Structure formats: C-alpha cells, structure tokens
Image (cartoon, rainbow, N blue to C red; front, top):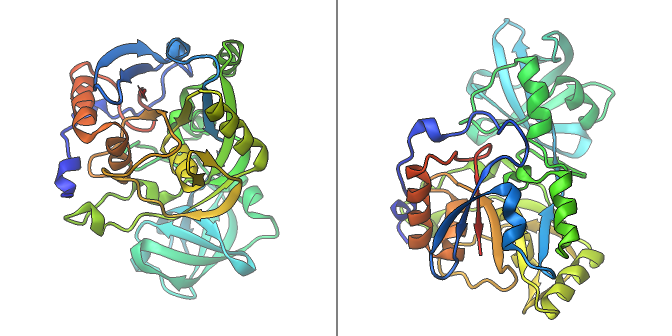
Length: 349
C-alpha cells in the first residue's frame, strides 16, 4: 500500500499544545467500525457506549521524565531524550545536534534549577542522533531523571525548560493508573480517564484488565518509505500476566467486547493472541498492524487522532477501514477537534 494513502491535511492550530483544563474534559468522536457512522460526544459520557461485561484493557506503563537539558564544556546548550539503560549503567540517549559531539567529550547534565547536576562522557555515537553516555552519578536512572528530567512531550508540542509547565506536564502527560516505569512517551488514549470515571464504569459492570507496553520514541517515527511495507516498525517491550489474561479471556467467553485503550494496548493484545484468546507473556513486539490485518482479540478501541503517514494511523485504518478513518478525521477537522497527544479522542466500536 502506498504511504501517501495515509496522508491528510491538518491545520496547525488544531494540534493541541495543552491538555484540557480538566482531565476527562475532551470531546469524543464515536465511529462505527463497519458502518463508518459518526456521532459527537464528550469523553465523560463514554460509559453510554459501553455495556456490562465489556472489558477495558488499559496500558499501565509509567512515563519517565526522560527529556533533559545539559551543556558542553564550551558552554553550548544541549537537549536530550533518555531512551534506555544498557549494561554497565550506560545510557542510550538521543541528543539534538549530536553530530557536533565527540567521543570522549564530557558534557554536564543540568537539574531543573538549571544548575550542573552531574557529568556524562560520550562513549559512542550512533545513527539518528543517538549516543551512549557514561553518567557519573551514584543514583539509579529513575532518581537521576527525577532531578534532571522533564516530561518527554512529542516534538509538535512546544516546550522549553519552564519549571511551571514542567510540573503541569508531569501530571497530565501520565495516566491516573500508571504503575510500571519505562515509557518515554505516554499511551495518550488513557490520558482522558479520571479516577471518578473509572469508578463509574466499574459501577456499570465494565471489567478492567491491565497490560504493560513501554512506549518508545519510535512511536513518533513517520513512515518515509514509498510503500508502507518498506517501513521498519519500532520495537517495544510488553508484558501481560496470567491474572489479566484470564480476565480478558473470561470476558470474551461471556460475550463481552474487548475494548483496547490505545494503539499500545491493541498491539500487546494482538501480539499475545492465540485464536480468540490471549496468553500470559512478556518480551519485545515489532508487530506492524496495517490495512489487511485480521484482528483476533480487539472488538473496539479508544484512541486519539494520529499523525499523517504514521504506523498508528495505519493501525486504526486497519481496524475500521482507512476510508472510514479518513472520513472521521475530515469530520473532526471540520468541527475543530483537537489533535494528537493532548487532543480529543475517538471510540471505534
């Protein structure tokens, strides 16, 4: 399939730069999976479209404060993104302007007060702006990032090292049910849920299951190949335990729908599918869901609006039909919905 088929035009002012004033205050576009029928609602009313016995599957990954700032010995400013910790405490990071750095160079990572916090030596340079850093600190990754890190917002949300905005983002760019640290991007479909809404849905008889998929920076990587089959999908670590697998399978066996909250939950469920059931597992997935894929587990999906020419748009296009999805996006643009990570949501049912 030609990548150009995943393209659409979005006015830049519809890219949400801030979350709604209240979590759960977003709009909700309802899209019929087979019919393409559209209706407009509010996220707080999502329970009206769910039934007792349905199972919401939530990704409980916790976003690390992975974005950091630093300086070179010459005084030049640096901005980076923590990606992963390797053996020996080496950090894999992505740094803007990494091409100027030299192997063996010492840089200084700065805390939120814009003071030098610790040194780091560039021990290896990789493609795509990635580097390996030997960080000179006794703390573990989470404690260091807790001192120096900011929410790793995607590049289309404009932020600097403003502390007040950082405090707000550290709360709102995190789901209320986040438990397992490891993501460097949020599972944004889950950002709309409040504790109160979750309790309301439980009261309606909706069941809940949790999976973990640590969202990586590759989630924002556009498809640059002419055909989507030429795109190499990013790899992400996932886990689902026996208890939650049983909750999902029980809901299936009793006629409930499996409603995945976000493309990350979709990828996890389809990765661990065995026929119409799932099994407990953990590991890395590179499952690329694109038009033509036959879904085995997921019956409905909560999702945000995705970037053009992205693997995430390919996934939702596979689920509801690309023609239906692009028509839904056109409707959302006409009605001035807010797009992307801090934007509004869709329920595809």
